[in-house]
Each structure stands twice: as structure tokens, then as C-alpha cells.
Length: 264
Image (tube, rainbow, N blue to C red; front, side, top):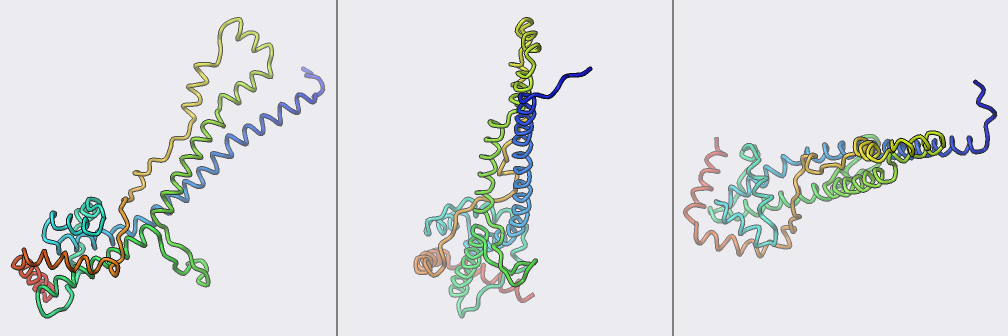
């Protein structure tokens, strides 16, 4: 059947529908692209976690017990629990890479070992949180900032804001309502029968909404940054001296075990 010549209204309606479709699908395609990049960065960052676990576990072992370890972190104004959890997650790998520092006495070896292990952990946490510049594998003449926690966190938060906006501004029911508005006869039938889109629209929007990103699903850990060793060395040396006064025999035995293990 001949529907008659196209009118300006027909052209405007088609253009509006095309724009609405572009908004709906375009925003989602862009969000999916960002989420894919986010997953890639998170995967790269997870590769750094074993380094954090090993250093945290070595430090935890050197500090004798949980209470002393908590006091150690508290002494430098850092929440201990995330680092204690990291230490517990290490499967014992630290024992294969840790080497006690050299000194003439067990106290000296212990103090140097604790401080050097802390320095290693602090450096690794710094890279984990903020990244570092390394040669770009695609172009060695350039440098790129490695994946880091702050970057991933900011990108995740921005993605969730985009998802929330897309769910509000690009609702499928808006397209359907607009299409219905182009058919006056169909609208009249709906008014007569009471068959409106209210309930269906809500179900449609909810079923097609993008789910927000669960940051915990990325498998990262949240830790507080550690002050540089040169900033807190004096404070830590005083703290370790007080610990040694109370636990000299335990520390001597601990360093003996580490030395014996290293000799084998």
C-alpha cells in the first residue's frame, strides 16, 4: 500500500530516533571500551601483589608477633591491618628471597634487616599506589607510567558515574515512548483500553540497565602509603631499640634461625 510522500515530520522523527539510538548504544559502547581498559590495568596491577605480600610477610616475621607489628605501623601513623592481611596471604615465598642484613651482633643484624625490609616494602607500595615510569614496550624511546592503584580507582569511579548517567539519560523506555507518540491511533487505543507502558517501561529500563562496577571484583588490595625510610628512620630505630630491650633472647634466636637457614 502506498503510504504517501515523506513529510518533514517523517524526516524529523527518523532523525530523532537515530539520535536516540546513537545516544543509547554509543554511550554503552564507550563505557564497555573503558571497562575493558580498566580490566587490563587491574590485571597488570595484580602482578605486583606478590611483591607486597613477600615484603609484608618478611617484616611481620622479623617483628616477632602481631602486637609488635601493630605497634610498628602505629609508630609511623599507618593502619596495620591491611599489611597484616597481606602478610597472611603470602604462601611462604618470602623465605626464598629474604636475606638477613650483615652486622656484628644479632641486635645489629635484626635492626638493619627490619629497616631494609621496611624500605623495600615502602618502595613497592609507592609503585603500587602511584606507578613509575618505565620504557614503553611499544616504543623504547618513550616512557609510560605503569598501572597503579590510584589510576585504577579513579577510572573505576569515573566509569560508575558514566554508567549511572547512561542509565538515567539513555533509557530504552524513552525510545519506545517516543515511537508510540508518532502513532496517534495507537495512543488513542491505549487510552481507551488502559494498556499503558508504565509497568513495562520500568521493567524494560531495569532489565537493560548497565550494572555498576564492583571494585572489589578487581582483586586489588587497599593499603595506606608508607612514609619513606629516611623520614622515619630515627623514630623506627628508637622503637626497635625498645623492642630489643624486652625481647633480646627471642630476637637472638630468630636471627640464629635465619642465619642457619641461609647457610643451607
